[in-house]
Image (cartoon, rainbow, N blue to C red; front, side):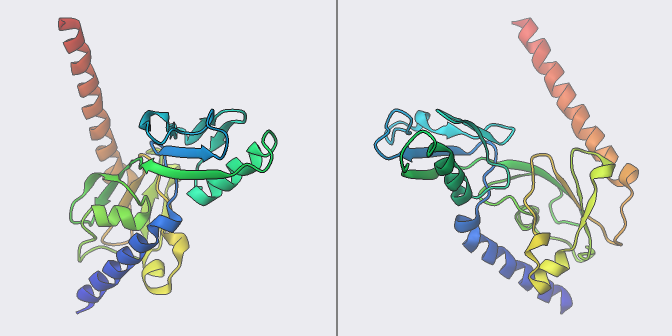
Length: 224
C-alpha cells in the first residue's frame, strides 16, 4: 500500500512541476531567445527569421549588443528580462523589452541506482531533480528516498544529499534543485554510496565510450 502511495505522491508532484514550468522555467544552455526591443529593430530578433534569435552559450551566457554578456545561470525568463532592461537603460531611454524562448535547450544528466531506467537522460522544459526522476521512469520499490546523492563534474568532493521525502511530503522546494549538464543523481537502497564502487566505473565507462567514438571519427576523417 505504501509503495502505491509514494507513486501517487510523486505523480502529483510531477504534475505540479509541469503546471508551474511555464512560470518558473530556469534558462539553460542551448536556449534560443527571441528578444524584441520596441522601436529598436537593429538589435531585436526578426520575427520572420529564426536565425536572428540569441543563443545561450554552453557557459550559460548570452551576447547582446551595447551591453556585452549576460549570465542566465539559475535565472527565469522574467529575471533575465529584468536584468536586460536595467542594463539597456544605460543606453536606451525606458527600453521596452520582451523575451521569449523560441527553442528550449536540453540538459543531459545521469540518473543511476534504484530507478526503473538508469542511464543518461536528456531533459527539456524542466531541468530539476523531479524532471530527471520522471525521465528515468521514477524510483524502484527499493529506493531510499530520504537521501538522493548528487554528484557534479564527476568529483566525489562535489557530492551532496537531496532529501526527496522533504519535497514530496513537506513541500520543501529547495530539494528540487536545478540540474546542470553532466550532473549525476544516484538513488541507493540503503542511504549509502561508495563513490569508487558505485559511480566511478560508470564515469570511466562513459569516458571510454566517448574516447572510442572520437578516435573512430578521427580515423574515418583520415580515410577520406
